[in-house]
Length: 288
Image 1 (tube, helix red, strand yellow):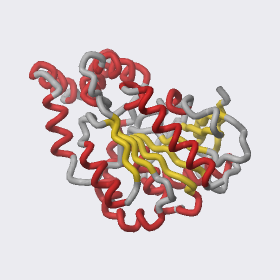
Image 2 (tube, rainbow, N blue to C red):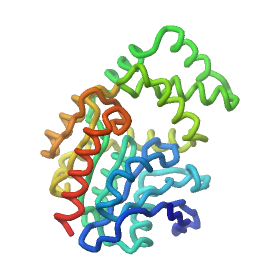
Image 3 (cartoon, rainbow, N blue to C red):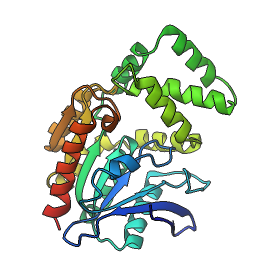
């Protein structure tokens, strides 16, 4: 898989991957991973559409192979994406966000609507109110013993590697609708998506709360590219109703996949692939 380090205007080096078809009749596509504070994990999702167009991914600064220390702001991450598009030689691209990546895609669309040819949002962003329902669903999916252990691990000043993996697994297995496989999926993610940049997570979550994307819904609707699609799991611990409300406000299509959670490509691969490929094929070509 072609990998390249691309330097930002402040000297930060971001690790990127470029795959897919060099079809000049198609707009390139950029995939934005979630977190915040995790490295990229969306290689399997990119693989679903690599025959359709050129596909770019990257580790956001401070994660994975994009080592960096400093203050994280939404504006800095929006600028990083603009500079990456410049480095790749693209005036415009179709953006695909997952989880926090949907927020980043939304903020970027507000700042640079002329550079967003299309938008595919996966499992987000969520229109308030949603957090109380999310916390209740998380708690309902944990036993009392699991919740007690999670609280115990969270209270530690520092965790061993084994404790960190256990902590992340307990935190993430509630994201999955398939209760029989949820723990194994979360454990695999906990082993692969480390270390977590907790400072980045805290700073960007605080930035989202200070200037929530939800407060810009009307503005976002005005600059939203045609054909925007939100794809979510109907059984995500985050309420699907929040995605429906956002779709209604933005006047865009919402596809909710039954029996799927926050990572619908894992739990309903056939249905997700069909919906994702249809959206990617349409958006990378209609606006070319």
